[in-house]
Image (tube, rainbow, N blue to C red; front, side, top):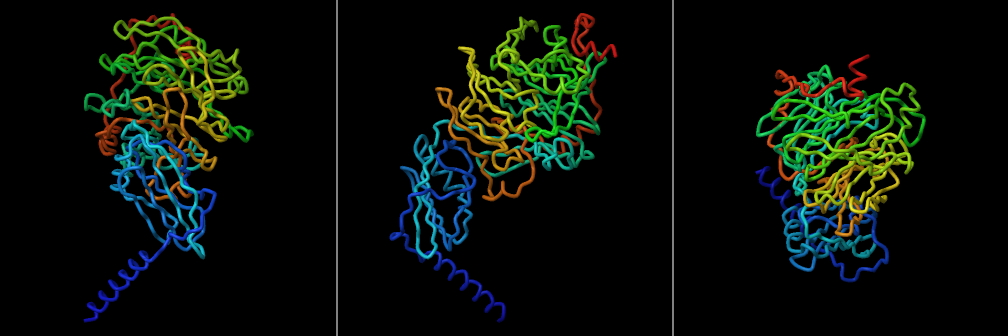
Length: 508
């Protein structure tokens, strides 16, 4: 009997809540000329038609909140509650976007203090073009996480909802470092990934197989470092680097990462051969290879002489943007073409990434060095390959804007930015139009509207891929403890002819 009474009063209480929530009248609301502040800032942006709900909270104190989300077609989404946290139902949101592709999306916000107040309508645009379904990124700890870390991992997030799956978490292998994931044209079936420290090596996922490589040879200075997968699928270009880390008293750059030496090598997956050329392994420091979408050009950066012993000179050196022609059928190289000379422009270039139509390059512009994630003054620039000019993009902020990439249709740019708090990096998106301009960027939506207010990790190296990577952290953990396959240096290369860092490493 007590149970029956208890259940009766419980359901009566719920019924009262429901009836009370329906008992409102916003028809006589006062009108405010201003727009209420919402976080994240999802106002006046262009969004993909397949993005997850833009959950937000309202920066305005009130007793009740009423939100209506609508387009020109389909039913409105109406949310009425006492909480300032607006969580939009996934199914209704997806239907609303799908019915209004290419049109406007409006958000009306009412806040009840003593009386109801209606704020100016938020207006966004739903693009015609979708974004790639998944985003892969590394999550790494505290503000000093590029130096000290505990838990880190590589994760894949379904952009169309809030599902997150680990590809690998380092707690399965003695908290080792994992970094530099790379894909072939956004293909989840072609992936490269490095492990450092315990059970170090390079993972290659190709043709539904996982292999672990020992990439250090007696003719290269280091294991593979920064990758770029050739669009043909057979080759991966990597840098080899002697990396040094220094601390700085500068407010904008707390840590300075530099290379004592670096070269670029080419790994042939079919032959398990690593090769190079005297043109990309010189006495200068070649670094950060990146392929054109047709695979006929390799873009990279280059700076000064190798083996710079003076720390200040090494840290403050600048990098030029270059490219070299490549013949994938005969594995031959053309001549070096300098696109941006650091000495002439007075800037340092980092992270070149070509657009899918091969018209543009995204790159980072800095005062010096190449490790843009450390530099709060790093900006993203757009290089026009037709007229060989560049400009600072409108998507930049006053904080760090660094690692960037393209969707496969070339209409969306993803990049890493610290603009939310000037401490932690988070993935942002911007629409890229036919004139080479971008819309106002917006941060990756999260299920919890206050996620970015309390989450104390960096989202590092965001990379768009077309669908889910069909391996999990157990597969990768088992791979780490398997026997590594040694890569072989190309016997046809006359090593003594190389004058670059590989030569320095060999003769010291």
